[in-house]
View 1 (cartoon, rainbow, N blue to C red):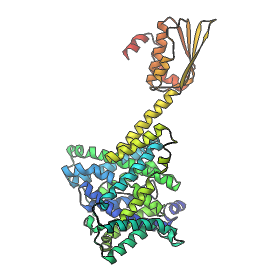
View 2 (spheres, rainbow, N blue to C red; view 1 turned 45 degrees about the vertical axis):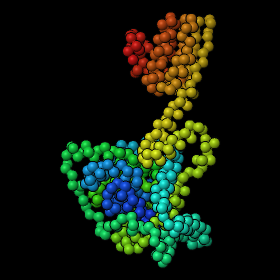
View 3 (spheres, one colour; view 1 turned 90 degrees about the vertical axis):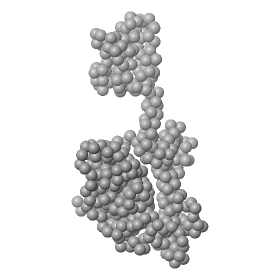
Length: 495
């Protein structure tokens, strides 16, 4: 117990505190921006980010990962807020949390094993592009000072770590934010700041039960939105956990993360916040700044609230150019540059899955659509590829007038047509043996193909024997096959 506590909370205190501070600064403009996207007061996004980060630090399944209000979730809330208002959004947030907790208990986190590496790469690249695109409004129709500040910020971020000793002690994004804020205040530059994004809250969040009627009609209104939010939230959280796993060479508890996200969203909804999930950008900032344990996530949430309530006069002075520089660093660090070099080396199907995932996510700004498209495409390519690894050979024993067919490989919906085409039904032989000892039957399509083969041979007057079925294949053939039943032809015609 003590060792686990130390490992999860106090094994990296200095790195976690500094990283959490950097993340808190980066969370503020994003939380405000996402609130504006969703059509709610900036307080809703800021309260959500504080609540979710603090709660997930205790109940999440991935130490060092940052969860808060996100753009992917905000995009799904727009219509609900516009048509029904904030109270229905809070109710939908509570239901989202309940669905995610149920997903955790149903162990749906394990479904991530069906997401191929090429889909994860496409997801990462698409997020990097979206993060960069989100910074473009801050770099359009602005004075040269903004470009100069952004360039200076990037220079600090990439060059400061090269300074001996000091460069390793203090995260360069923090130096960038503090340094550029001081320069902006001293020189009195007229550039956009955090304060221009919206009014910051001046009170602690309070317990708030959504003011909606508890009726079936209300449930029908919020259910579609809650389902969408739950799916997108879990997808983004589990994908981000996979990326943080790779960055830190550690593992995460995906089903616990599902439950943790649900508990955090319920907490957010009860304190007047919107639904959120893991943030890949901030999680990478945290890891790159030295954050590794739950303490970094807790620090980010607590320091966010302290900044907003206590240091608000200083906070509003932070130039957006400094935060843009940090987010550009995140997008550059997030993008998998190896994936471009690997386009020549990797199979065409892998490249297509990766590119389709990127295109769909960037085009729709919906991570769920991109991941779904990638997973479906990867599954189709896999089924097609495995379907080719099926071979049927044959030999004729003239003494007994027996044709023996030997089937090798996987027989399922993709290879069943090839399976049938491998038999010569017009050959005049007395006996046919179909040897399946090196084959495996996976589905009812495969069983149907076997039925057709046996019945066609019998129609031509041959005596057919099926041998060598393994236990699993025999089970499905016995259950769904009709070739050994008296009315086999009628049943087959009825299928």
